[in-house]
Image 1 (tube, rainbow, N blue to C red):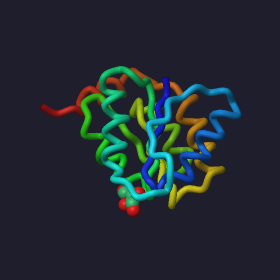
Image 2 (cartoon, rainbow, N blue to C red):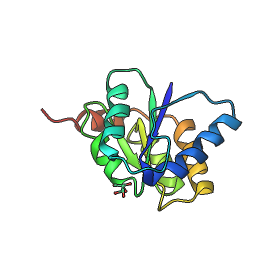
Image 3 (tube, rainbow, N blue to C red):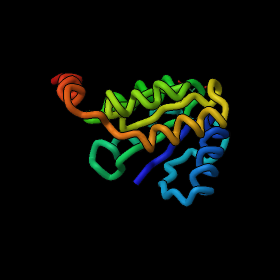
Image 4 (cartoon, rainbow, N blue to C red):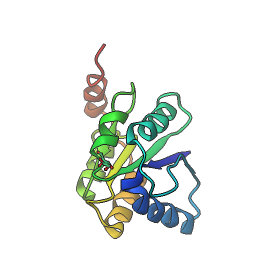
Length: 142
Ligand code: RB5
């Protein structure tokens, strides 16, 4: 299952991404926030990232104003590899080389059409494995 969450800065883009997934019949779980009222992004990042870390969700999408705060918070969780992407090449490489399991997008940075392309690539690109698996195993520290 895919989970998606945002803060107020990412609300409009998250809604567009949900509409895009709905139009394709893609199942997902929306973890909020569900309005443009001001909230604190770490609460949403931690909610989603905890679900990735415990195996509830396979992949996640986090949207805030820049994507920066969401990625910083999500990457504090063991096993979470959150990638902030604003173009499709990074989205593809985040999957192929980094086995990213969370996509972060900036709602005040990236327009909806580019975001749809990024999401499609993120969800559809497999991990290359091999030497990249060894490198990923070296990311986590005690
Ligand atoms: C909220 O104003 C903004 O700081 C937040 O959406 C995000 O960009 C933080 O990194």
